Amino acid sequence: MLPFLRTNLPSPDEFLPFLEASYKSGRFSNFGPCASRLELELTERFGDGKRQVVLVASCTIGLSLTLLAMGIRRRVVVPSFTFPATAHAVLAAGCEPVFVDVHPQTWELDPEALQHCLASVPEVGAIIHVRAFGLCRDLSEVEGICRLAGLPLIVDAAAAFGGRLDTGHPVGMQGDAEVFSFHATKVFGIGEGGAVLVPRSLAESIRRASNFGLYEGSVIQAGSNGKLSEFSAAVGLAVLSRFDAAIGSRRAIADRYAAALLAHNNSGLPIRVGSPTWQTFPVCLTHGQDGDATALAMRDHGIEVRRYYSPPLHLMPFFSSNARGPLKVSERLSSKMICLPIYSDMTIVEQESVISAAVSTFSP
Image (tube, rainbow, N blue to C red; front, side, top):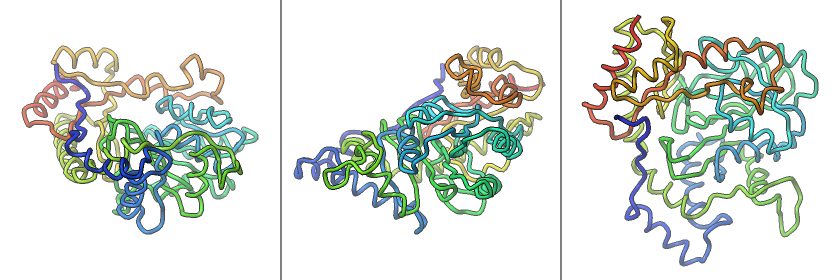
């Protein structure tokens, strides 16, 4: 069985040398030498001269800390077609998630549904847009709606770190903040961790929020414990040297998948994706297939797939009271979505086995 995930973190020999500075200083958390160095290097590489990286313990806590640093205390609009972490981050910040539908072609927050929500739901304090599956679309339309409404836009870009828009600009520059995951399953995987990319004017407030809102020994704002440890940061420093190669490998595999599926009339591929790093390869079944049945058929071919965002959050018992109106697109997509495996070190034979199984299983 070809597994869905195969992580490829650096070996101890690669990251242990970075920890010498931590042991020499005796600091293993609280913005130690490895975390400080990683923040600086990521800011120089991905901040585009406009934004600063703030390292956090996870993408989930990064979303919560951003809401806390912005002083958001009311309802937060969230697409229902996302991973539960997005909504849990809102709850952890003391806010209430309000679910809206996504667009059938982009699989992301539907601008029309967002406008309807803002016109009909009182006390909305912020919007979270999710870059579904780490896709890298331009969000200018959603940004414009948020500006007109006078509301901050936070982008949950968990799987998009290192991606670029069609313009060539790095992901991380849109909305008021973009938040990323460095979980072991991500392309920039360090075990557990994350980052917030924000204008420098907001960076220090988020950093304070990650350290209980402390400043010079006194609490001056809301916060939590969201700091990244030195051990995780050391892994991140080692990952940096191999990150470009991993992205290049995954993009080549994604191109092969897309070409093979399109050649066999499987048109349920994402549109206007920019240049993602491809943690996984999402396909929306278009010929009446059922997602669960298709996943079982792929398993019969020896390929494990995943069905992310299924069911959508508003159909999960804990979140069932947070929907506002019908969310038909989210429900339909969740029943049809299949994610194919991609590894940074995936062999040609493994790629061909995935393609063969997908072409056979997805064909009309």
